Length: 383
Image (cartoon, rainbow, N blue to C red; front, top):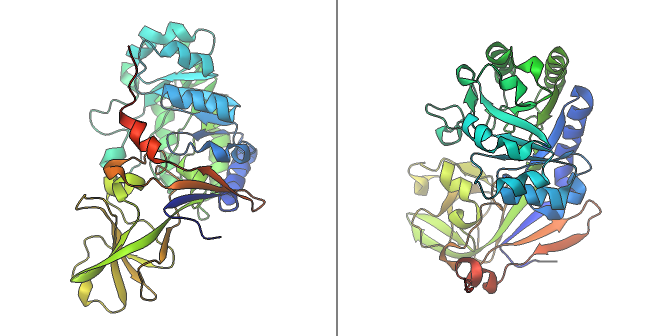
């Protein structure tokens, strides 16, 4: 069946390898894994994913509520800053709530007296390829540093979260971070019941040394009598989801440009934010700043979106054959940080979301409409 483009396709069979690796890590290390909803919150897949993850972790009130209502299991609440008028509702959904700062813990911690309370810590060491997503950059507002913790902090919290990685596929880097955590927070760790190492650790990659990873986690957990948590987001959904688009036009300007029925800013925002070239099925990505594309041999195309943004540019690609108007193109790895960030810029048609179950059954999970666009910014009510 040929579906109308553009659309996202979430495929459980393609998600399964990451889920099985998550199960393996939990069994061998004793750690527990919770899904990071900031990365992926398409709850049509939650029935499948809850077989492998023990719950969810959030970054806001609405994510916390979604995790509680649609995923179940453990619900961890976190936010860079909670508003006074939302904290009571947040903790009503949570098993654990994590405050980002000592100030928020001081002001709002009493709302969470009936659940387990944690504090985000900043060990001042981490791993990120982009300064924009570097949690331990200079002047970082994310987490409390060791030298700023009061002596009695262990009496006020039961756990902590240390999220300092982004796309970290280097086990040695992660292992050395744990050494620093022990050095800087060694006095606090024995007073805690649980510790989350956050997300951004690419442990579901096939090349990641999973045995070493599990051994390191288990040793750390046993040495400090801690329940360890991991918060996979991208690691849970890597290679699971495609964005399928259609070529609407071919514009000739030194090099042929394919204009597709989607947009970078609207449907794959991270490509624009971090200026990387996403994978494109059956093609070879070229550098975005590649020179003299028109003089290269083969079938070289720029792939661009149809919004009026001049920089609506997915990337440059070498194709094995000529591309024609009406052809479909498939970006095969867009599960993380795409559907959660899509927007209505230019009023471009929003992609549908399809969900293919492990059985092969294909379901339409969402079909956005004109009414969704119309009501997104203005829906008048008397106040």
